[in-house]
Image 1 (cartoon, helix red, strand yellow):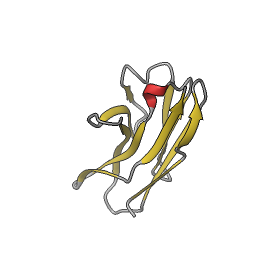
Image 2 (image 1 turned 120 degrees about the horizontal axis):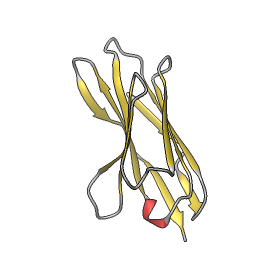
Image 3 (image 1 turned 90 degrees about the vertical axis):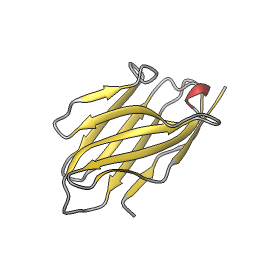
Image 4 (image 1 turned 180 degrees about the vertical axis):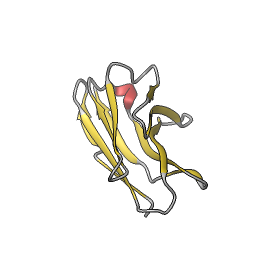
Length: 115
């Protein structure tokens, strides 16, 4: 398994969740990792992106409510999500961008926010 995500689940509106995703060992170095999500009936969209040097990019929907971080040594990315809303309900996908081979998605993890 190239990417193993965990931490999804059911939470009430206003609650928090922390997603984790570990990339398997590879001879191709990690350039960046990210979280995307796909709400029901919608296209997959970026939530947050982090480069190996720590630079981050957030979707407007995630700004001020979410924090992405990465453990470079373990090639693990985290997404701390706070003040969750029903609109945050989606399948969340981990993404890794590697040297030479490019980017790939892992299996998603379901996040459901109840009102």
